[in-house]
Length: 452
Image (cartoon, rainbow, N blue to C red):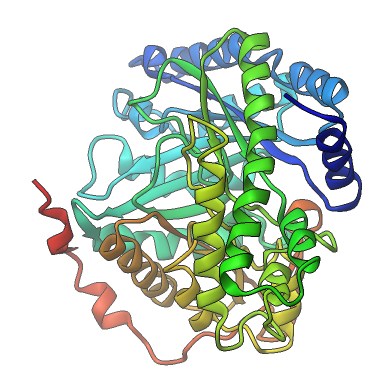
């Protein structure tokens, strides 16, 4: 039962510590929209999404008013569109992207994710056409997000797909250079992608999910930092306990919102994603949590250890507050979206290599990192391969979201605004991995895959 103290504490978290629900995301299956006529398929897609999601934004706004809890984004995720492309090979996949954009405009959602392909073991019908269309699709739409899964612990890494995605990321940046290279900011390359992720840009509705459901992504880095600041002399064990208790409170709020949205919309409640998702706002930074633990600046030696403890404690605390935990669940470290990460990168303390090490112990991977505009597609592919290897060997989800800043060099800034923030152009190695990337083939699955 809630008491007065609990209520006042939650109000303080919302008003002073940037606590919010980052997203409620409706997952919708489009398998029954498949049609050999791409125009008919697009019509079915529009009809089904609007029928299910037309009340998503009003219900979210209603919940915000009822509980006083900010819900920053309302989003939709759909079945990987490459599956719909498979039965209409002569059609242009960008037609699906435009249909999804019409859905976003009608429903008023912030993003729709699922312009996606799953090619971790090879390309099937529809995959290649969709992937090659990604730069155009992200260029001609505003609210569509794309993802490609190129590897998994069970299957290894599809290096042909890795090579292709390096080219796609670069082309997407070139096509949107006049808009601060926004294209690749809406494109994620995964290893071990999950089917119930509510966060963009990597959300899609997996084929193992029900026809329609609601997921919730919580936030709250500012709340965790504030809690730790009250105990400046605590031991590491005590810090872990504080984080667990705080994560429990944050997740309980997510559970409340998810259950309410599920009831109002008449669809099943999927999962609560426990991930601490930062924003560029002051006081809402994962990097600042690590600094509260005792680091002078995020990125210095000890950062990986602090992040490992934070990630583990968030999961242990959050899982007790909801019986339906899923998604990615942990701590995100997107550079351009985290005020502390931005400061560390600008100061030269946080490097691409240190970020790569940090991804071995946290949620997802190299996220929202700005790189020089003259980076080669092969270097982008090599960065993707490195990050996918961490995910494959450690049986965890990893991802890459790089933004080549066309016509910008190391040390300059790329400005997105809003939740996407801004980021300094970070340095990359100048020695070429082209021969390795151009070999093609597949990195075999590791021994961890043989679990049966």
